[in-house]
Image (cartoon, rainbow over all chains, first blue to last red; front, side, top):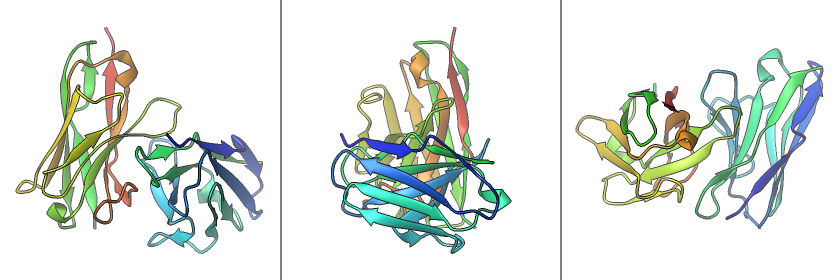
Length: 107
Length: 120
């Protein structure tokens, strides 16, 4: 089973600043990684698939990069609606697995 | 607009059973693999089960295999999860989620979730 480790657990950022979130895999994933955003009381929302492809309707300030075992989600200029928990998820092998999440909070 | 609406959650005693439903609209339900994903309080999501588009193939997380059964009725655009022999550790919000293409294990649309609480 491939395990994903997200860091940091909590990221404090001021509005307008850049946020960089990390996801590390215990084995190579190629580019089979997705990122989701989750706000309190809501379901996760797909942001990125294939490590770097934005889902439909996702603003360009969200970008994904990486391959193999190291992946990054970057939010170029944080807006108020971006404060949330972010999860990475691999689908390279069975079973699919989610990371523990990074909470992006207002500094 | 794609919509997935879960129902059937609630409080159940350990060892009990519950059936969740997920009604789909806004897309051709019979063309998509469908999944159940759960999320315990304060934890990350955890994949539970999937069913292929014509209901001929299923698989399950080790933690639920033999206790949970996923089914679908394409005529009713509805996905189900029958949960038996429930345990306290099954307490979670259960989401149905759509896979965008054949064989995908990532999810482009999610329902709002159904809370299942297993407690005496």
